[in-house]
Amino acid sequence: MPIKIEGLSYIYSPQSPLAKQALWDINLEIADGEFVGLIGHTGSGKSTLIQHLNGLIKPMQGKVVVDEFDLTDKSTNWRQLRQKVGMVFQYPEHQLFGETVYEDVAFGPKNLGISEAEIEQRVIDALKMVDLDYDSLKDRSPFELSGGQKRRIAIAGVLAMRPRILILDEPTAGLDPRGRDEILDQVKRLHTEWDLTVILVTHSMEDIARLATRLIVLEKGRVALDGTPYEVFANAEELSRMGLGVPQVTALMSELSKRGLAVKKEVMTIEDAEQEILKIWESK
Image (cartoon, rainbow, N blue to C red; front, side, top):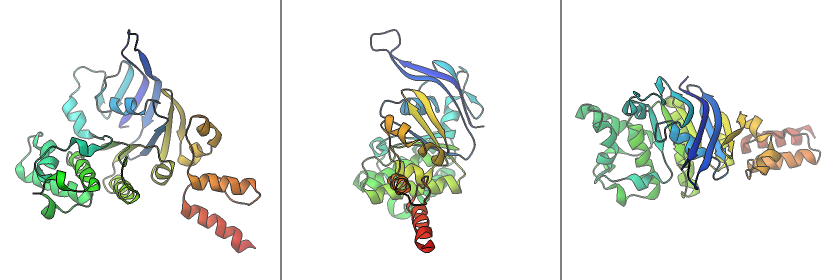
């Protein structure tokens, strides 16, 4: 069990007029290889929760265990923990600083004390995983590349650390539809080919329905819903009350069902909707 959270609560600026409770008694377990979508309205506690998972925020109350690392233990080796847990923040290209693509992607591995040959291989592998060509880009400045390429280079820098858990906080924010799809398709491939545990924070119900195997919904710092995408999106009214929605195709199929068509309301993808509609067409 790579991630186990017990009774986690957190308050910003405690014992001050600005005190704000961000998390309330969170209890979660995330198993090896899961692809978890973490959703919730702005201010629901998503970023606070994920920042506990690699020690950016220390547990104030409760317990967080990531693999064998107990984050309440003062002797925890934070360096080793952060090798296992890769974090990609919103607009990760803002964190680029190397003069060349190679320097930027190699920065993390260089701090591990491994050989130059191993560092180079990690950079090659990481760039390949985000569909960037090593030979044509390694000596170029990352700042002269497109927005989508910059973001992929930033993700490659995280992947070069060879994490076992990958956490992404709105990784497609600000990208055009093509760039968004490219990034998310690569994340899905990483999950499958590298057998990574992935936690994806997003506001896009369509994206999360297509990618995740499990959804966790936060509301005002508490876990409101937890289940498969089908189970969570079946609570359309509850999600609406939280300021969230369901995938557009799910809303469409629900409306068709209300109007008397014999279709499943839990459909989440266009492909599944097409099959449902074709069944009705062929039965006539």
